[in-house]
Image: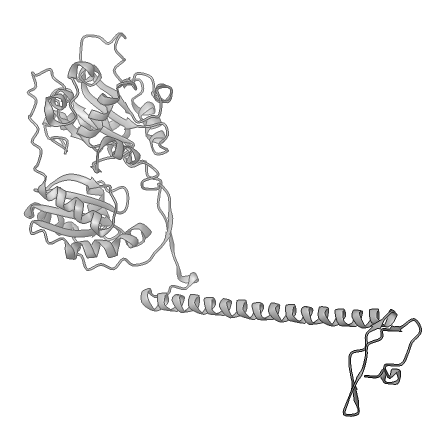
Length: 433
């Protein structure tokens, strides 16, 4: 083993070479010279710089790869969206924006709460295709009278909710397999007079007829299974026969409730309706609530048209003769304060704390707000909020459920119309369905 400094790199000032032996192997010196000093630091810095450049290049490469992967995913997503849009257009058709027409549905002050059937909506006109039989004015009455049970969908072609219901309504009509049930629909755009005659004020309205008479309007879910379940219950339910109250019988309709025809409520605990019937020719049973936007215009109309004509509350100077008109307010308000501030002058009210009595009237007449149905145990109703039921003080019968519509159409003449119906003993509804 020898040391040969001539084979080492040229010396530079400040460099120090450690004595690392170089071994001769076939005339070639082998070994690792170690340099200490400025040159070593320079070599080390060069090595570190090289590592940083490699790391930076690797990072840039990874960034480019991630960017390319994200771009590929974005392109794939866009392709899927365009493919779905193309499939939708081919399936349902395409109406250019400049050809779309719009219809504004007028304000509806009706028996339904505003959150159930919005009073105003703007929807594009499209077609509602259905294989369900369609009834017209010329055939409707005979068809309903000739069949035991008829379930009717009153719809329009421009209503977006009707469009959503149409496929489920068609499948329901095909699947129900009830021999005595006919499932049909009426296009209220084509048959406006028929829908006015049936007091259709919101779309779609699903109405059940039994033996030619209205049983109720369906207010549940509108999928196939829910419709089948509802139809099954209605087919099994026996018609409720209410006893007629003789004219000389001083009992009110609520007494029938306490006798077992609806929620059991002792009559003695609910004098308001009886008191009104005993002292009036016509009684308006007003179902409303301060939180319901649709109730406000009807409340104002009742106050403006009949405010001074109503029978004064108990304790006031009433006189001995029957009064032409009285009003009993059946509240759906959230508190007694809301009810008392909402009620108008000369209104009789069912006390707010008497929840059972108010609930009994709602269940008996099948009139309630949509959000009240679960707490009342009701799965259907005839009317929502606001509703005005007109009762005869003489016969103790319901003259009509359509007090709202009569008042909107006839205003102050509505009272004479109701009195004529009561005198003729031909009420629009003989009993609560």
